[in-house]
Length: 541
Image 1 (tube, one colour):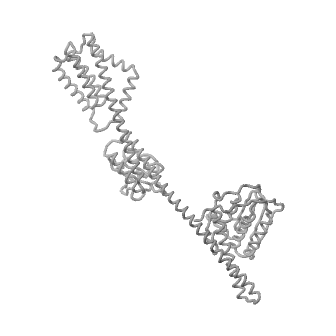
Image 2 (tube, rainbow, N blue to C red):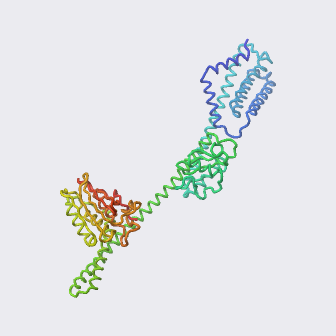
Image 3 (cartoon, rainbow, N blue to C red):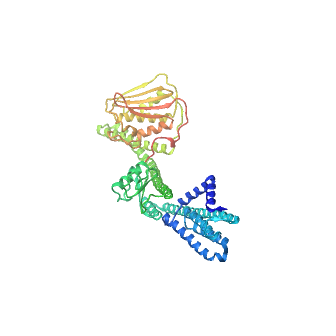
C-alpha cells in the first residue's frame, strides 16, 4: 500500500537530484518573466483563479463520475491543467496540477475520501497523471512564453523599421527630433523629450529641442550628456527629476522619458530604448554629413569658378599691360630727344606701375597653374651662385634703398632644381623683404649646405611678425595686420607652391636679433617632383 504523500516526496527527490530538470525549470521562469505582457494581476489572484478552476472541474467531474468512470475523470483534470496553463504563469499552473492530482486521488480513486491508494494500477495511473500534468503544464507555459517572446521581437523590429523609415525621410534636425519623439511616445506610452547638443557646446542643447526643462531636469540632461550615463528618474543621479534620461552616442544629446509607470523600465524596454537611440544618432550623423558634403561641394564649385575667372581675367589683362608697357617705352624713347623732368617722372611712374601690375598678374597666373597641376618642375643640376645673383638682379630696383649682403658658402655643389622656378621664388622673397622693411636697413641672402640639403636664407632687420600671425603668412591673399599697403598676399604663397613643387620646404621665423628669416631647403639629391594635389598651399577661395 502506498500513500500519496510518499509518492509526492519521491517525485520531489527526483527533481532535486536531477540538475537538468532544475535548469529547464529556471530557464522557463526567466523566459516567461522576460516577456510578460498585458495587465499583470497579483500572484494571490492567479493562485486563487487556479484553485477555483480546479474546484469547479472537481465538482463537475464528481457529478458525472458514475457515468464516465475515474479514468476518464483523470483525463478531464489533465485537460483543465493544460487549458489553465494558457492563461496563468508557471507557478499557478504547477499548483493546479498538484491540486488536481490530490483531488482526483481523494474523490475518485478508491478508497474514496482518503489519500490512500490500494491497487497497483491506481498507483501507476496516479504517477503517470502527476508526471503528465506537470510536463504538459510546463510545456504549455514555455510555448506561450516563446510565442510572447516572438511577438515582442516582431513588434520591436516593426517599431525600429518604422522609426528608421521616417528618419531616413527627415531633411532637418527639427524634423528628426519631431519624428523620433512621435515614435518614442507611441512605443513607450510616455511623454518624450529628444534633446540634441549644439555641435560646439556639449551640454548646451539646440534651440527648439525642448525649452521647458528646468531645475533638476536640466541638470540631469546636461550631466547625462557630459558623462554618457543614464540620469534622472529611477537613477541615483538627480533622482528628483521628472524624466529618465539616456545619452545619445558621441555626445549628440539625450532622450528623456517621463513614463506613467511607477517602476523603472524593464530590461527589454531599456534594450529597445538603446536601439532607438542608435537609430537617432545615425540619422543626426547622416544629416550633418550631408550638410558637410553639400558645403564641400559648394566650396569646390566656388573654387573652380574662382580659378576659371582669375585665369580668364589674368590672360585678358596681359594684353593691355603689354600695350601699356610698349607705349611707355616709346614715350621714354621720345623723351630722350626733348628732355623734360615732368615728362620723365610721369613716364617712370607709368613704367613702375606697369611692372607691378605685370608682376601681380603673373603671380595670379602662376598660382592658378600650381593649383591645377599645370606647373611641372624640370629638375636639372644648377649652379647656386648663379641662381642667387640672378635673383638679386631681378630685385635690384626694390633693393636699391637697402643694404644688401650676399653670403654664398664656398664650394657649393650643383643642386637639382628647376632654375626658373627657384629664381622666381628667391626673387619674391627678396622683394618681400624690401617692401616690408624700412629704407636703409639690411637685407641678407645666404646660401649654404646643411644635412644633405641646400639652404637659401633671406633675412632682414625689419619689425618682424607677431607669433600668432606666422602660421598664416603663406596663405593666399593673407596680409599681416601691420603690412604696408600695396601688396596682395600672393608672393609668399607662390614661394611655398614653387618650392614644394620641387620637393623642398620653406619656413619663416622671427630672427633672434629682430626682423624676419625666410629659409628654403632643397634636397641635394634628385627626387621626384611632388604632384600639385599634394602641395600644402591652400586653394583659391
